[in-house]
Length: 295
Image (cartoon, rainbow, N blue to C red; front, top):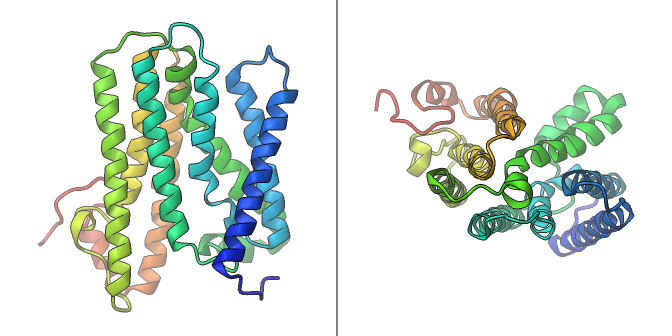
């Protein structure tokens, strides 16, 4: 099946079937979980069940990239489930803001993935490297590294939203304003950066590096926007109830992953494919937008 070049229509049909099956699995899990289990843990169990269904489709179709959109699809479903299981006293304005922002982020990011996804014949180059390095362990790398780890990462990242939507009853404050600015600004930055990259990809020459727009000030402005989004959700949780100290683990884990794994991996690949990229790294900030050196 790996030799088959899937059409985009067939690929999206299988994708839709896989995600519909995952949704059903999550719904059945929610029904079966005892009612006295807290919404936080009910979602955690259902999230794993849905991920395992996507994993089954990934293995059957020999395409681990089936999972890629789960990062942006699942959170939208999760926050609405939590919103319908809120404890008394939840601030509706804060809850509405969180629901809107997560939905905006999720729909936009999923669209950005969908418009550039070639189909089931395409597998992320990072997955190929993982498979080639340890082919005998590929099943476990695929299950835990590509599917379950990101699911856990995103779930932890949503903990701030859980506080704001389910248990946090604090009044609106200036922290909510900061959270709104950070989260909305993050989505906007990521959206602009992605659009600039798409436009550049249409006209770039072989080996050319994008140095315009937000990319003039950061090598990975889209990642900066993504990380800022998770920090914004955390701030909503702080505004709702600052006693849940552990929720800072969500944005911290995201930051650690991007700074120590995602960005170095992308930079190494760019150095291999673009002769001038090593010099570009010396001039342009890796993550936080800042004025370039020597220009």
